[in-house]
Image 1 (cartoon, rainbow, N blue to C red):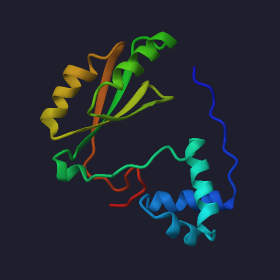
Image 2: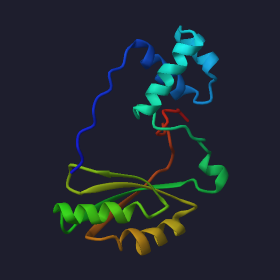
Image 3: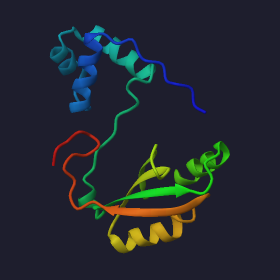
Length: 159
């Protein structure tokens, strides 16, 4: 089982830096320093520390899935037939290999996992569910919920 993460010791400036970068990860250090009320060098030092300690895990481009023809989103509840640690580990390793699964969460509920699955359309989703997700180790049953509209996405952006 994974060890609980250490909580970072963050002050007001660190939190301002993080909040600013969540809003605009491409912001220059000069603009960031100005926004949070520091000079460039101390801001750069803090930013480097936040990255090195893993508080800031990375920077990435956020793409519009619809423009890539990948705007079908479904959520799948997955119930396993075995929830011992070894079975959970096997499932976790295998589900990470399915490119269409954007998110996978272990859930405390009447089912074991909730998957966010993105595909081009319902036909592709049906194939992914039938050929990949249902074939994962220890899967006993699944239920699907198709998203009709995204109101708020993982990046906190309102649609």
